[in-house]
Length: 440
Image (cartoon, rainbow, N blue to C red; front, side, top):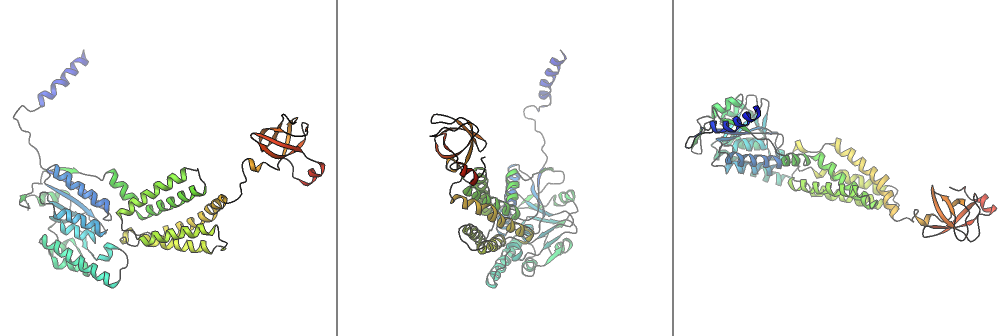
């Protein structure tokens, strides 16, 4: 009875609290917040663009991006900046936080492209030289082009947002970096806020794109990175890409040298697909892949050419230089350290010397297993063997056997051939016993 009453109460209560027809439920203003920390990369661009779509679909007052970055990829930064400049119906606020954080390199472009740029105390912004954003060591002509492009690009952004274009150009040309207080003084940012609550209070009432922001008592919606973004961010890390490259090489070559193993081949091809997927999202140096390919060719060639290790040495050097060049176009925070390159080179060299070389040679040597390997082996007769039947023991197995001349139980015999699953044997002369090895 009590259960029935509870069920009735729960079925009635929603009708009691549900508003009647025509009644409106007041809705609070909504603010969407995301956090971007680390290098600017394709996953970062995907994350920010997804947050913009969600904030727009929810009718949010604005999107706040809490930023702390040493810089990143030029192409990813351009995609983010373009999304900011195209956002006319959704104000975007970039907030450099927490204290001690920075908006360096690509982060400077992103911060200045926001509708509202804010920083926490003791943060900094600047050092936007294109070498830091793009990585590598370009020649003087290319470097000049990069600087000219970056200067004009950041100048356009600064003028679009009515910020200090002169300082923006100096951040690119001279790599200048300034504190939050100086950035506010020079009209690089709009305000300084010690925390998120103060930021919401300070931007409340500001007019952006003709709309007034109402953020003082807004409902906060925080958006985290999803599984796809986390996965892409993981596999584009240089050390992970190097490991996947090694798995692809070991797996595919291992399958070729040992056909039918399956697991090495499947693992190698999966790793290869992941490497290609990550390479499509990153500025990978093609020359690096070419050198790694050359290294594999040299390693394999050593198996068939008596060069006494010269090809192995050349392959090791080629692999090391290829792995080094593979990631040279990445920003400094994303480059691969020698602590990864040297062990990977040594491991790959040993792999080809001790495993792959022996496996490939085995494919071209005479078969030493199966029926062909039985001829000439000694056997012990378990049951009398004649032209019709008999049993012997060899290699830990019991076999049926026949012989032209009868061989008694307990005697030793020699295999002279195989017919189906029956061994053809003959007795061993005393002279043969003294010259040949003992039976298995």
